[in-house]
Image 1 (cartoon, rainbow, N blue to C red):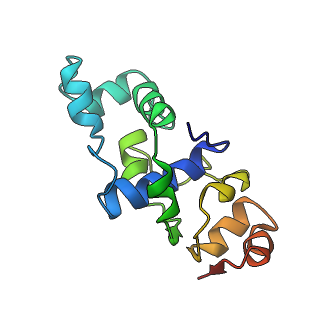
Image 2 (image 1 turned 45 degrees about the horizontal axis):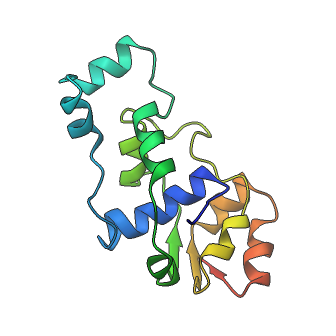
Length: 144
């Protein structure tokens, strides 16, 4: 079982594989998941429960428990950090990108991606984690 140490980093990998490459399936859809639980209006549910700036427990549990096969991880050559990622919207459907909810806090999980060559969003990553670009460069990973 592959274990990620940084949830936000795992979400970047999920974005690439599930919503980008579509090789990790089925794609998680929070609205459908919540409809199955009897919640028809997700935005109203979020607002009524003060969940605007949080990752919904249902999404966190799904993505924390999600197994990503080693062969898919080995195929990841590029990651991107972008506040508009689909996976972020599946976790926090009314998130506005104005806080640190999805900040990466550690890069230990780079070991899980043996063929990573590029990281797009290096400036944003450096802002979240000072020294990150140096860590990537030391591993031969180019930033854009």
